[in-house]
Length: 451
Image (tube, rainbow, N blue to C red; front, side):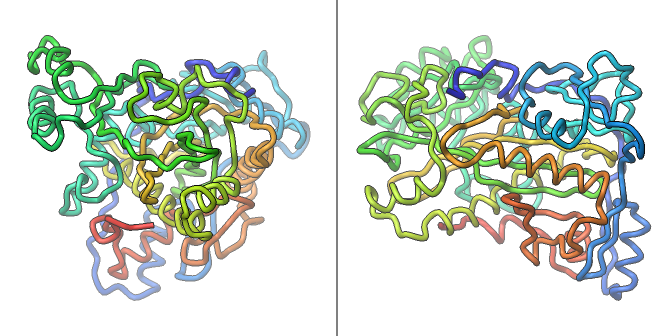
């Protein structure tokens, strides 16, 4: 099964050092501009295309050879992207591992951008500064808090994630224990999640603060750890007669020039052990643990919708409404990278696939768990997801970067643009046009949002 193909490098939140790609932040301080002036301002900003309020025009970013076959190569990754590479081969691309890197048209990496990569001349599956979306758990939290604060609210008030506390700082550690020691929280369950792990590695479940107070030696600086404490959702929705599950969706940054972001449904992962809040078995609580059995482990969203309706009495349109919420949070996650201290580079040929993990409680509330910077790109048999999702992603990336004239000119969020199962959630050209019209993105006005 798919679980047996997991390797540490293939689905991780590990931060990596990226090359520095400096770029000035865009200042949008013009008011009361006419449409023509806004269109002209977009052109002057050189965002890689134009938008007049109705029609999108993208510029070609990468030129493929007119004669001969395009070449792709693995820079520092082994087999993780084989479904994408399989799709490329069916379109005439050739794997050329021994070719000179300068002659290759697409490269695949697992984080570190190779020194010999020709920036802006070749396709690469990395946007560089991606830690806010899929880096360490601590960094992701800091970035989400920064975005909320920038717009005048607190991240904890948005209801996107369970309460979290970075345990690498004395201040945050003490804040956690102040909350955990309150009388109403003395029997509450908490998850300790190491900052740079994946597949449930190192996750520990605690009831109440007593053992944790000893583990962190009363928040002594020498005992602080790079990880977070997260409030455990002790009343999860369950399926198949009482089994806990989580689920994954995908966030695709299809381009940096302009920034284009897409959402796609992923898969559901069911625990192999029946749920009990008092169970001591890790597999009961951590559904993405590598130790989970692959038998009856993966399901699709259609099955989930039916199971939740039958077993939890959720409404029949629950997943349809949930999907709209998931897209809103996916957009929030991307915006965290737009307000990071060092902005995303404006580089041709870049794309990046992220995995986003979630869970649902018995009341139907959806909780973001984390983003994964280099998720496993594999085949999940029997659920109708793959290989279609990877073929459509490959086609979309190639069309954006090498054949943009083939795309619908209504490539906007307002027109609900879709490419197969991929739904557009952010178009930088459209975003800038609306911002100049006074319609600026503000998550404090979007969340909290019920499903």
